[in-house]
Amino acid sequence: MLRQVVVVGASAAGLTTVEALRRGGFEGKVMLVGAEPHLPYDRPPLSKQVLAGDWAPERARLRAEDHLDGLDVELVLGNAATSLDPVRARVELADGSGVDYDALVIATGVSARTLPSAEGLAGVHVLRTLDDALALRAELLTGPRVVVVGAGLIGCEVAATARKLGAEVTIVEPLEAPMVRVMGARIGGLISQVHADHGVPVRTGVGVASLAGSMGRVTAVLLADGTKLPADVVVLGIGANPAVGWLQGSGLNISAAGVECDATCQAVPGVYAAGDVASWTHEGLGAQLRLEHRTNATEQGIAVAKNLLAGPDNAQPYLPLPYFWTDQYDLKIQGFGLPAAQDEVEVVEGDLESRKFVALYRRAGRVTGAVGWNSARAMRPYRQQVIDGMTPAGA
Image (tube, rainbow, N blue to C red; front, side, top):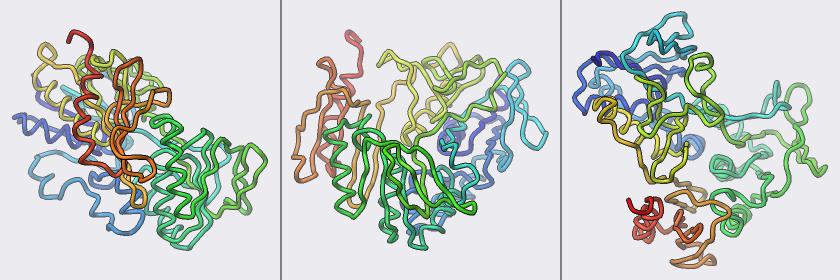
């Protein structure tokens, strides 16, 4: 009998799971455990509105305190989970206490990667948490020379915000174009042009050899081609790793891909995963998938709650349509599906020159994704084509 649910991870996926449990009629005890001391907050604004100072930190909260009170959830914040024993159905916490559960949801997200040469150097930042954003903002207000390493979503958004704050910014990307893995070189290359138009050069095709420092503070980024880029601030946007360290020895199937689950997001009986940390079998794609997308955190939290309440015999496979977006300067990019660098690309609405278009991606004749630049309305008709491309033949 399901009497107590413990959700580890107090961000979007975790909080959404709690809300969906209550909406689904669950009246038992719910505990939400978070490593950070803050009330649950949204992460996409950290690289934009919060970093820019357009929003006070409190505005990034996912829900008001009275809403959280209404959920009748026990919040355990600033107290990270340190280990899991699924046989005893118990989670141990950093303060030495432990909590028992009838069902567990793992929603611990990811942790930002760093570089070995960054250790001990002031002025080197990652951006994953609210505290990360506030610390970086304090340095950006001094008008520094900033080098952003990595031209993915976070790197490009931070670069745009830092430039808005008046910093001198350079982006370094080892691949041939920003966001090339998703958009391909042709369209990814347009992002370089957008940043260049705002005075931000993008150095592509060259990696970082190391960071240089003096008196404990970063002073330069040394590139693999011998170039030395002076830097007062360095932001590392080089990806993230699933936060699964606390699950070592638990018996769960964990790897660099995250907590590996079946099609219903169940890792082992009674233990589910949701959000950035979850790797599950997407039956529509016939592949194991993990998504670091904000929309997925919400949708997967809802799916996990429904499956918990339905029970394993009635659980349904999780079959989302992946969706992502990014805002940089006045550019808004949205994407459906899983487009990739090797896909064929066709501009089906607008044109590249105007920077207002929709592009369809195909692989082996099937639509794999759609990307829209400043074209939210024009994107809508192509959503179904992406869904059809993700549906197995005969389904």
